[in-house]
Image (cartoon, rainbow, N blue to C red):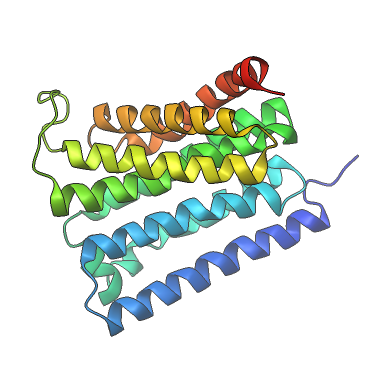
Length: 246
């Protein structure tokens, strides 16, 4: 009977904890040394979290080992929120949000990671892991640029006033463009698809991420964007490969 944790999974778990500890420490130091806007710091943590998916996908032997590792990280983060809010560097980030809201976001990210791991690697096998990477990249990069561009340059409100009253056209376009570029990069590195397939898939999936983020309210895009992009990519890429492949 195979062990629950293989040696590779044990090393991967250590890598996850080291990654989060070092990344958070670097962000804290930079935030104390430089006058970085709170929103930029908050979104840097956002990117740190999403980038950890690559460790989970490519430093573990089994998907449940990766899921167990990230579960341990997020449970620890959830329990330590009371302590983190007392640290000035964290308190500056959380000033506009309650501890309850932050804990809800931690739980949402944890659920999203588990859904992506189970939906791709767990259900369909390791050959589908790149779909999870695409979902997390579209959310991590796209949502970050959407928030920063929308708050700094956003002027035009979209047509969906009742659904997304606080979001702007500039932010939505920034998410589409940045998510598409990031998805194209992921497709170029992790798949052997043709250039035309990569371009069409990246643009279509980037548009999907932007649209889902636009209609997701109160921070629920964490739970909606990654599974939507990953699920659609699993359906779209085989079709595009048949139509436009070599």
